[in-house]
Amino acid sequence: MNRFRLSRRTVLRGAGTIAIALPWLEIMREERPARAAGAPAKRFIGVYTPGGTVHAVPASNIPEQWSPSGTETDFELSRILTPYEPVKSQLLVLDGIDMKSAAGEQQQSGLIAWLTGAAQKSSGGASSFATGPSIDQVLSSRLSAGKPLSSLELAVRWGTGRMHGRATPMGVVSFANDAPFTPRPPLLDPAAIWNTLFGSLGDAPRTNWDESILDYVDQRYAKLSARLGAADKQRIDQHLTAIRELERGLAQTAAARCAPPPLIDTSDYDPFSGLQSSDDGSLVDSVTDAAIPKVGKLMLDMLVMALACDQTSIATFMWTDCEAKHTYPWLSLPETFNYYQNGGGYQPEPCARIGTWYASQNSYLLQQMAKVDMGGHSLLDESVVFFGSEESHPASHRKENMPFLLAGGGGGLRPGRWLTYDSASHNDLLLAILALFDDHRATFGDERFCSGAALPNLT
Image (cartoon, rainbow, N blue to C red; front, side, top):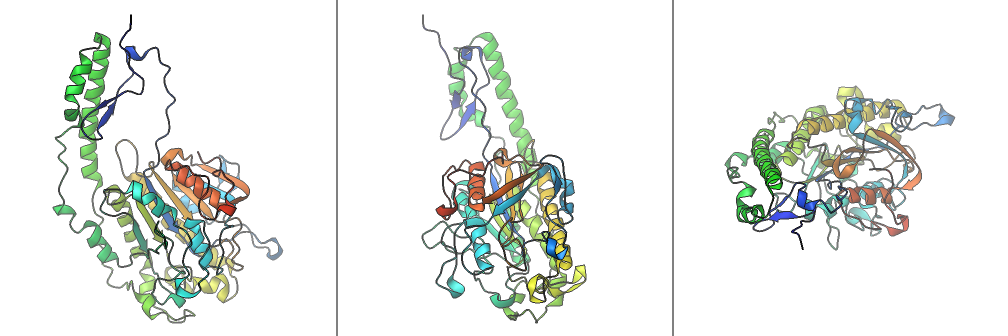
């Protein structure tokens, strides 16, 4: 006699794409439970910090300022990474990864390859952008579908030096997933960005949280319930009651988390100061430079809220361009970052101070993401944040042992570790990041630098 059975993977389907997973029931007993798969990451953020880092140079007695010490799970953060201590458990420090696909001008090629794994176009000049799409844009069509913005590109104190405030290969990290790989320059004006993201938020139509997804499957449930035993019927009733309670909690959480950050006064900050820049950085806008910390914080707050409010699922953030020809008066450093890197001779101490400050701001970003409750877990838990630069050593522009960090828990990423590799290709790292979003492919960017497998041990 045939008995009515259900698969462990049976769902209760309603209209459209609505489906509700069922709890384990007695009528599923004969089937072995399936192994749970990790949920793909939901959000990607790429954060660019200029100028590489300060690695040890034994011949010059320059100590290591970036790489941690210790073991994979028991490590001590370096001087430059110390600001990440509050979010150390959410951080994955990567050592021994080389940007082998960077080909072209020594700094521009690294900036372009960071998220594309591809070479710079050889046409020369201001049109020499990427020869492939960036991972943020590859992911955006799927992750940001139906959201107001496909992606969000932001930058602070951008367009310095030879850029003269224009979009050139010295200041773009995001490239569209189209045939010409169209560059996507960042937004610069904090007040205009705030108005774009949050100005009409109060007028936006609100979701009718009184409507439950259970209302769309009621007839299917009634039909199934008639075929269940008493114990199974009790289980499924408890399961659906829990879903309704979760919906109510999520509605309250969504309303609470989507709060625009205060729009501070940024009238002393000229987002288009780069339009008056000089090639060598000799023209200093000290007022705008002094406002960088407060503007940077506002920009990060807007980025976090754009993600929390579901304006988009994809963002990139640039702390400047790869010229970095602006000053750091709040650090009592009167010269440009470019000057301390190589323009005035390599000066590791100012470079370390600047790198430590950027780390403190990036740590703030992670801490803010960790505070956003997405319904039992944080915004950071379901995201992947990738911190990178265009080079490793600022004086030589070398691209071995790149200063790369990952953060978050999206896609099963296992943070709280320090991983060391032996000259691994950064293209394989990009493949591993894509895999966290359930995008499994054998190559990305320049296939010559792909081993055929994603970088191991991230999950």
